[in-house]
Image (cartoon, rainbow, N blue to C red; front, side, top):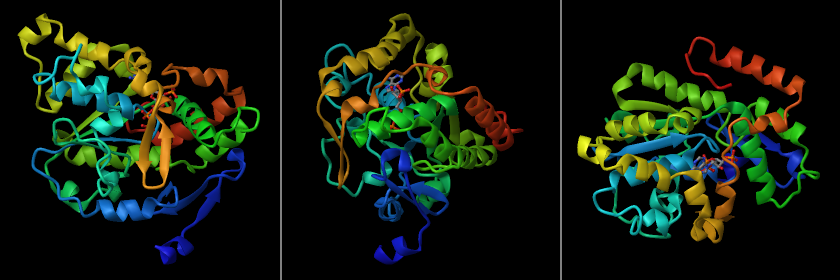
Length: 311
Ligand code: PAP
C-alpha cells in the first residue's frame, strides 16, 4: 500500500484547515485508506439474490438503507415496536460492501442479501458486475449535496462555519475533488451501465422520494422483489414504513442522536452527523448568484443528453 500511495495524486482540503487529504485512485478521490478497502472489496463473491444500494455520499444513503431494510423485513418485525431500525443505526443494519472485511459491529439482524456501497461502478467487485444482482442507485440535487458534504466534513474535523470557508469547499467540489467524486462521474458510470442492463438498475432521486414517497417506495419494493400486496396497502403498511424511515422519526431516536458509528478501522463518527436538516433547497442559504451560475453551467455540460436532472 505504501508504494501505491506514493504514486497517487493528492489534494489537501484547505477549507478544512489542511486536516483532510484525499488521494485519487482508479479515477475517484478518497481518503488514504480507500485503495486498501477497494482492493479488499474485490474479493466479495456476489450471491444470486444480492441487492446493492449504491450512492455517492450525502445523497440519501442512510434513508435508502432504512427503507430497503424495512421493506424486506416487514413480515418479520412490527415496525412500531420490534424493528431493528428502532435500536440499530441504519448503516449497521445494512453494511457497506467496502467494510465487509471489518469485524461485524452488530449482527445484521436478519442476514439479508442487502449491501450498501459508495464504490464507483468501475470499482465494484468483478463478481457483482458479472452477476444479475439488483442495483438501486440514489442521487440528489448536486447543490444540496455540496452543502450537506460541507457540513458533514466540517463537523467531523470540529470546525465552525467561520473557520471553514464554504466558497473553497464549493470550488473543490466543482473541480471534482470530493469523496468518491467527481460526483457526476459516479452517477454517469452507473447510468451508462444501466443503459446496457436496464433490468438490473433502479434509479431513485432523493427529491422524488421526498415529494412522492408512496409511489417511489412502491417502485423500490417491486424492484427488490418484495412488492406490497393489496391487503398490505389497505392496511397502511406502506405508510407505516415511510413514517418509520422518515427523517423526523429516525433523527429523533435516541440511538441516532447519540452514540458512535465505526465507519472503518480508523474512523469513528457521531451518528447524529448523518441526520442534519434533510431539506430541499438548503443550498439557497449558501450559494451566491455566481456559484449558482457556475454549477448550472458545469452540470449542463456534464449531464446533457442523459435525462438525469441534478439541479
Ligand atoms: P452518507 O452517504 O454519509 O451515509 P447520506 O445518508 O447519503 O450520507 O446523506 C445524508 C443526508 O441525508 C443528510 O442531508 P442534509 O445534510 O442535507 O441534511 C441527512 O440529513 C439526510 N437524511 C438522513 N436521513 C434521512 C431520512 N430518513 N430522510 C431524508 N433525508 C435523510
